[in-house]
Each structure stands twice: as C-alpha cells, then as structure tokens.
Length: 132
Length: 277
Image (cartoon, rainbow over all chains, first blue to last red; front, side):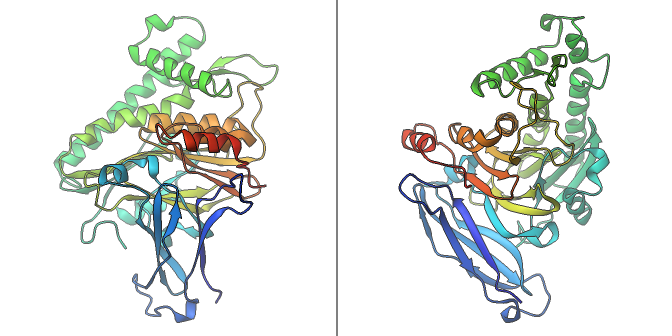
C-alpha cells in the first residue's frame, strides 16, 4: 500500500515573497504498518505544529488499515476559547486523497445545492441514514 | 474519534423548497419531545418562507413582485429584508451578485433565491437555540448553521464535497459555531451566473465560505463563485470570512480570511497572487 499523505493547505496561498505555498505535510505509516484489526480505532499521527500568522496549528490523523479515519485540528490559531468558538478562524483541511463520507468521521456535508431529487444519491443521505 | 464519546447524535430529515433539510442534535435535548417540537418549528419556518419567496409558486409574494403586481411595500417585511440583503451584496460584489438578472439577451427576472436559502436556514435555526444544553447542526441543501455551546468541546466536523466527484470529500472543516455555505454548479448545472454578463463563470468549480452567520456565508459563496477567477481574491477582502475555492482543474485556494481590524491581512490579500495556476 502507498504511504498516506495529507497536505494541510491551511494558509496555502502564495505570498509576494515566496513562490511556495505554506503547507504542512504529514506522512502516516504505510497501510501495512497500521492496526490490522479492522476496528474503528487505529494509529494516531500528530503532525508538527505549523506556525501561521495567527498562531500555531497542529493536525492529528487517525489511520486504520491504510485509510484515514479521522482528521482533527488539535491546536487552533486562536488565543482564547471565544475565538475558537467563532468560525471566522475555521480552517478547511484539504485532504490530498479525497475521502468518502463513511471514512472521514464527519457530521454533515456542505456542497452545491442538493435537490430533493438528488438527495438519495448524496453523501448527506448516507450520513443521515447511518445516524437514524 | 466520534464527536462526543458515548453521546449519540440524533438526526432528523425532511424536505421543503425542493431540497433536503438535515438536522443533527447532540446533548441534553437531542432526541426527546423538546427536540421533536423544535424540529417541527424549524420546518414550519421553512414552509412559511417557501410560501412567501418561492419563484416556483405563481402566487408567492416574490412571483407577484417580479411580475409587477405588487410593490415591496405591499409585501411582508421579510421580503424587504431579503431585498436589502441582495442590494448590499450587489454593491459589495461589484454587481456580480444580483437578485435581478437574466441570461444574455433575455429578460431580467427577480430571483432572490441566492439570498433566501441561507437567510431562511438561519431563521429556521432559531427554535433550536432555545434547546438548553444542546448543540445543533442544521443543513438546508448543503448549507449549514451550527452551534456548539462548550467552546472547548468537540466541533462539528463538516465535510466539503469534492465538486468533481460528488461521492467524495475534498476537505474537512471543524466548526464550533457559525455558518458554512457552498456554491457551485455541481448538482443543478450552471444556475449561478455573473449578473453583469448573465453568463456562468468559467474556471471555477465551487466556493465554500465560513462566516459567523449562514446568511453572510451563503451570499458570499454565491457572489464569489459568480466572479470566477476573481473568487479567491475577492473573498480574501471580506471581513470575518474564511473559505475554500476549488478550481475547474481540481486545484484549490484556501482563503484564511480577514479578521476585523487586520489591515495587514487585507493588504496581503490584494497584493498576493492567490490563484494557484
């Protein structure tokens, strides 16, 4: 199996002084090295603290059987609990190998307008059904 | 890795305005009579909005307004509120966003749905705010409004759909409290147009915006998407917003947002080449 890599393009835009986007690359163990018991639990990899202009950001991955089962931001670029509760600092975590809904441990899906006709085929429907 | 260990998230689904409404509740009133009563109230708000604002109903106030049969003063105050939001968005987006627009050569029609969806979901969440000790995440067709009472508690984990593969996610956003909206052509085809040209923007697949209010997030997602190649640079100038732009070639631009009073970030947004290509 290939090594799993998640690129967090937290503030991944080009600046006028650098041609490289500010990125953090976390390399998890290859799939074979992860827990093979098939349970929801798995090995956890915590990335380096990435310095941003707003403060440190640290991302934690959970990997089971070569699949990323969870992505958690453990350190936010905020100074207090109030800031952290406000979405203005919410950080989108890009996943280089896109995840399916079941393996991503998510609560809801945001996407371009889902119609009632298209709902049954949507990821949100899969989440709703799993939770009902 | 679940959000609240040992605490079940209760889910509710219904349909209104031609779109699915999904609710997730966790905490004290996640699955009791209070929760069900609040959910009933949520849907009642959305049905009321539909009666007034639907462009699919010939007898709605908005349809009659579009035909010139009534004036804004004849409509419920909510109509004037939505039209004012649309007017502000038009001004702030340089005209890319407008509730009055048409295809090239076609008639200009009144369609405030670019404002109504997020605004309606924000209103519909009000009954949920009265549930003590309860966190909620309400989705109206892929646009979400969330609340987490404990700032140190687990956030809601929002998956952002990959516009090029709708069965996959391209990003995850941990969000405690606020709104998330995504605009794009993925499900309905090219229904968002640049109001200045009447044409669908090119080179862009989707825009996701996070803001304190879903009303703001939804308007800005549509306004940014309508601007095509300028989406990320424009979004960067918007106070209190963060976002993610997915381009047609699959590349992405994260928009970290301008915090109020942060002139440095705003200046950086203007001078930096955001477009990754």
